[in-house]
Image (tube, rainbow, N blue to C red):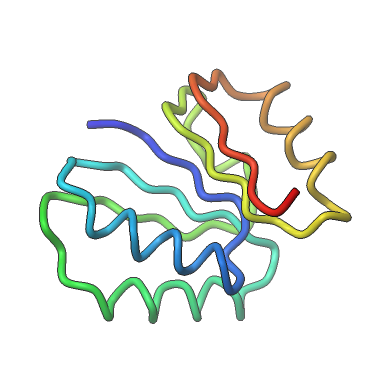
Amino acid sequence: MNTVLLAGAGQLGSRHLQGLKKANAELDIWVFDLSKEALAVAEERYNQVEETSTKNVHFVKTLEDVPTKIDVVVNATGSKPRAAIVENILSTKSVKYMILEKF
């Protein structure tokens, strides 16, 4: 099972989450956002999509809760916190691939 971290659960991040749920792969998905409101919206949107294979999803407000080894990071944060979040992830986690959203 691959581990995916989605950093940023806002408008685009929650849509990425829906796409991850549709993927034909077993995934352990970690959704990180500082806003509990954004996490709630992301969870609501996640539940609107039919699951195609086994998924574990976790909604967290701190990166400390995320596993150390991550296969894919999707960074869908805003431009202001993006650099700090990327630096935090790369300095505390082992990441195979990172996708940066909204350049």
